[in-house]
Image 1 (cartoon, rainbow, N blue to C red):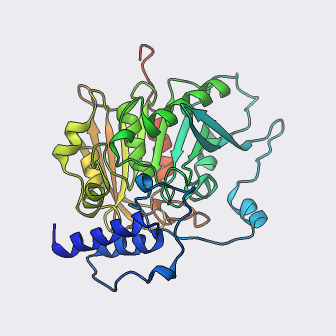
Image 2: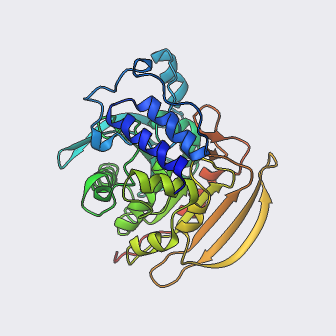
Length: 374
């Protein structure tokens, strides 16, 4: 580790321990850019985080740069929450609720498309969407346009929200050992919520999928490895592989240069679900090598070049299924940064001119289902 990076990270760790999260975020971003810059602002420049919002153990800011957008609440709700879509006989449902498991509580939003009365009723697929740091369910839904795509195929979409008490910037704690294991921490909570929604909505338990952006993408890969009996396929956008880190420092190193393939490989379970990966090759927040590390160990079976309708180039590589590993796809979005490809400008961290990641993820997901014996 170079001395500049190490020094800045020590400064960031001190700032997070004292509750100065905004200053810590600035220092971390400078560390990732290799910019010495100025020292953090004076202690009076930003107020310490409220003790009720997060604890020292979960105050690490290790994802997309934090930002706060002040809006009128009613206007914000109208802008970010998709209006119910009405058909001749039914209406989409877009609701907020909460769930508790093993003493942990979590809020979520749920999109249930209107029933298609022209076809016999059958269990619907479920897609779980995990937002990135500083985002929430409504923002992520607006940015990815996943509800719009899910409506077309009749899929239910679940958006869990990381509470501030779990992390001061609403990041999923993918980089901490207690949150990388089956039956513990956030993976246990998210898997229990998923199964709760499957039962509540009578969804198709063989067609349950999980996807996420950045910290959410990293947690999606954690869930795929820890619960291959729950999730039939995984989507990771601008994220990191399961086992890429075990604390804040190792997480920052992985984000800066890419996860060590050996570390990622040894951390995987005996079953790796089918996985589709999107990553911009100009991402300065989470290095593009992390996307490649997610599919490491799979055998490539074809590569193609293309471009989105807006002209954004991409390279798509397909990987064959093998013993214990499902098939995979890796999409390298050229000259793209840390943003959801093909998303809407109505949400944060999106690349509207990119190939439509939501559409391609759904296409990939619906081609896979768990075996009846799983």
